[in-house]
Length: 350
Image (cartoon, rainbow, N blue to C red; front, side):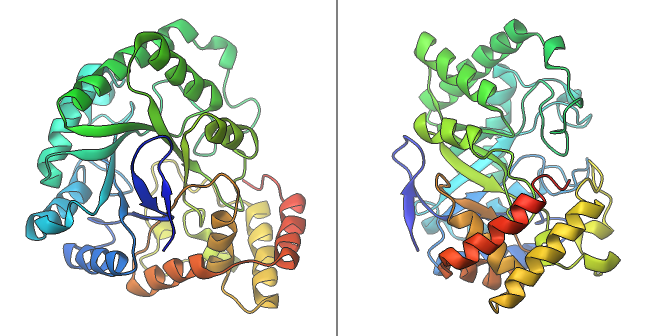
């Protein structure tokens, strides 16, 4: 297993980060225990979760994933020191979490305390903002015309960001979290946080996690360049595009128990004609080189310059084993060229 620095922090993380959002909905405590033991045995030391998990989010499953992890940590306290544990505060819009209100500094402090209780730990290594208070071009909202940036109040957003940073500072000073990070952010948002931290002598964010995969490369090159040169770790989530880059949904298939058989908060925004055409084309490339589509997609993300650690998730041990093994695969220049040919044909398929 390869390890890299998490941005400008002193944390060393495995290039594979184990995502957990299915735990508590599609996976049980026993499933999670097995996944954790297998991942640790393979050298993974980086674990990502969130207060709003399991997914899709509901009032009934809120906090369930953190509780599952806490149950495991409670039974295995000696393994906590070797883990880099990351979680996230939910943004606005969910009525059962802070009545759907914006994130504030006070909300950060309260939510950290609640996560610590569920996780059964004294500290969180990386505490992240799950999404910005303002509307941002994520979750299928990246097409021109979906957002009116000219209507957004930049000064108000900066005020909120400064208040949030003070909340992070209070938690870091209290020893409850070690570092802060961002998720589902943009270059503008990243830069505001960095500038505010410097201007007010507050802790700097050390990471950004956004969706990045063969169907969704909008962060390349501008956000990834900005992150790398600003010292932020870049952490792709959904490297398999919610599972579609396994090919399991081709030709209208809906495998029992798969994510697309469950109601999604943001709908099936990846379920587009061009997306399926792109997946079929990538499947042809994978077949040509004798590997699974999932292996090809994960290996491709891992080989992109600027990627620190890739967040994977699985609902079965077979999936987890295949996903982890993909990071041992090195795609040749010929294979990368064939992949790029498809990517140029379908640069923005959903």
